Length: 66
Image (cartoon, rainbow, N blue to C red):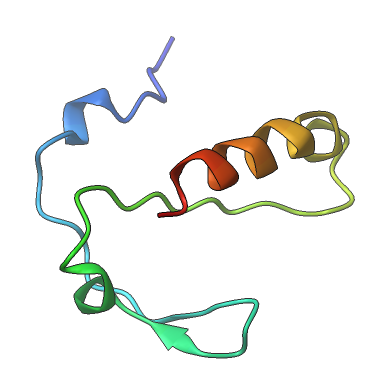
């Protein structure tokens, strides 16, 4: 069975991207150069799994937003 883990990507350079945020602004990796960690979450708000973990995602964001 193939592995879908991203552990083998840890430490690799990030792929350049330009994505629009919920604030309608575009972001790329350069916008986060002053941060130690960057987490990207792709989710669909009608997905049952996302609905089930939304409180945990909000708590994670609150804990580390600074």
